[in-house]
Image 1 (cartoon, helix red, strand yellow):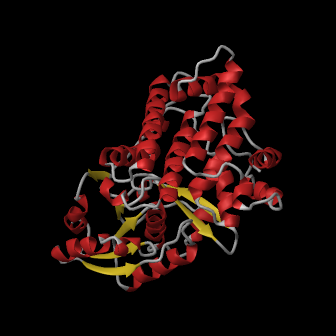
Image 2 (cartoon, one colour):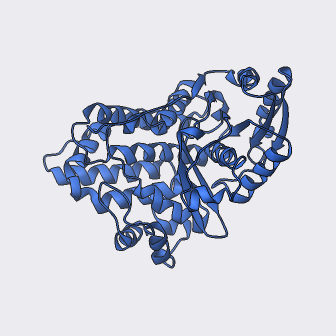
Image 3 (cartoon, rainbow, N blue to C red):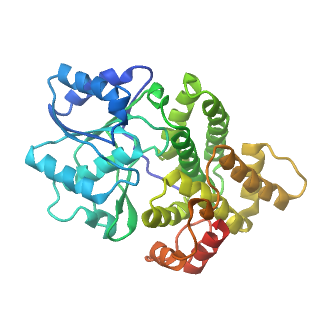
Length: 385
């Protein structure tokens, strides 16, 4: 096990009707905020009114900025920065899924920065300060409600890039599983794949003697698989939704990755696909991860054997067959959720493979389980075709 630093300051408020508490939590930080949300589902299902009433009950003034899209865009972030500066806002409340929360985090780092907020994403500018962000979660997926990450798409440059800093972990996150009841099945499925992918990026490591976090990863994956089957049949089964919501948070708050080298190559490859083709992140991951697994499993076949046995309960005598069966079972599971497992299912061909691979490896090889160069990325994309 490697040495590590871990800091997770987000206050989690979990359970039924917890959204009514957001006014009191927000008041601890500011009486004037930016209320940030998506394209209208919170209004359609009544959450918007609950949020507004809770804020008004605490005499909190708010400026609204809705319209956040999946794969959140840079112009919306820039609009939020200008609104915060214009109205002297010093707190951002994100109500929605990972895209809304990521957008809020990007706004938070841009308000007090004199330059272009894209500097943090495209040029690796160091994050020195950020406004506090609170979150009301409506989708179990990205784990952004407690993570130190934000991913933003620059459509002009066809780049989708991430930042990481403990300064952008939300100060509180309200998690009510009931708020996920009305999600369309495809969004639920995308979220399931996203949280599993966050675990895969940590689980598949060459770091030795990490049996505790291995077990935590495996248990979380088994729970996700079990409960996903329930919610796909019964979207309003509270306990299954609750377990998935907690799993999505645990999958990306960093605890599963302590003391071990993480990979993240599959995420970087997927970011290129969604930057060029604007597909859902979870759908991109359900395509790329099985392809990545097929390409790299021989680097550490035992790890894939362990995964197949501990997560899927696969028993065979031949180690390599077990490893391959684990990969096939993963792919079949994604298909059972209605997710794509091939690029052609999304009408994506090989026209941009070389450009995506070049973008992906611009700063050098990606990943750590196996270092991937431009040619490797192209081969993985071919496997995903």
